Length: 313
Image (cartoon, rainbow, N blue to C red):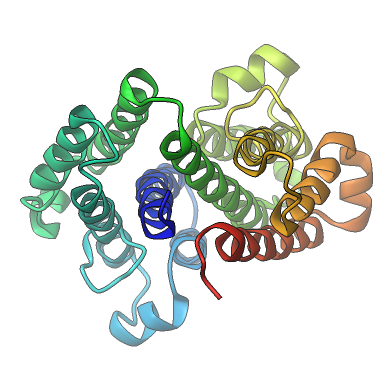
């Protein structure tokens, strides 16, 4: 396969996954903003959404004021934000258009239909409609596209590069969401285990479609350390860091064959920390420090993968 084609497949998958994850970040921020609290808490919730999903300096220079309307506009529909839902869907669609010979007709039609619907949505109309419906629509369109891939695409190199791109993007966003929201939601001592604490962490779990999974596994009140364990170390949780690197290492095994690329070694190191790690050790060293180290290692792996397969220096 040409490295250019592999690159387009890889980034098409990353853009779709990124659009879904931005919708999830906005979803949890919106749910949390509806809970009782003072205005400073609301500002910190929306500020954390920008820090997770966008460029803080760019947002501050263009918008200035942190509020619901500005953050949703910036992360959802801003054409000048390279990580907005709008630009991610457009980027995925443009890559798919260049790949018509490497993807199925159903994949192209799914992405093209999503783009046609999205470009007709404006920020004022979104403000008067339901934010929740919009976030759910973005997630549903992403799920539809992933279902079309699984149901129609040949299991060849095209499939592997798409799977690799989606898993890399998902791991990055799960770590950023957990790190950002953990600091915002560190409760006061008197709130631990209370109603507000429960609903805030419940919103985080719902944002990654893990609310019911949490209760099936732990059958108890929602605790931050268990939320972290679910999203980091549980291999049976589809959006966990462990599950993402299960997929990444399996896919690299298919792509590398008997050749030992440096990216495969780096992925194996990260995967081993997820596979053999324990939450007690992670919390002893600090969750923020662990996630920061993970994002750094993950970024190094992603860059090396592009060098090894996509001819990017």
